[in-house]
Length: 68
Image (cartoon, rainbow, N blue to C red):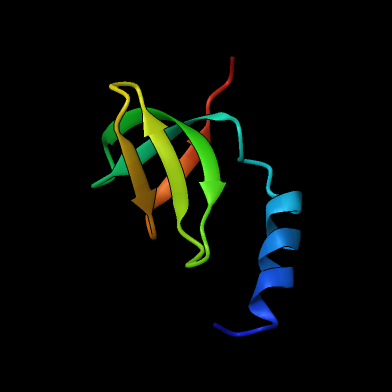
């Protein structure tokens, strides 16, 4: 564990505009899954809960905030 990564991670989470929001996960430029962005883990992956209740960790790709 790198000592300086934890404070950076906490600040990164505070500034995130996506956490606790409904999002669209875009895969292969056209596949869209709806989810809620729950957290960012220590590996800087986005933890999401999909509509079917499944928890997934995303480490790359495109997400967009859904307009409610």
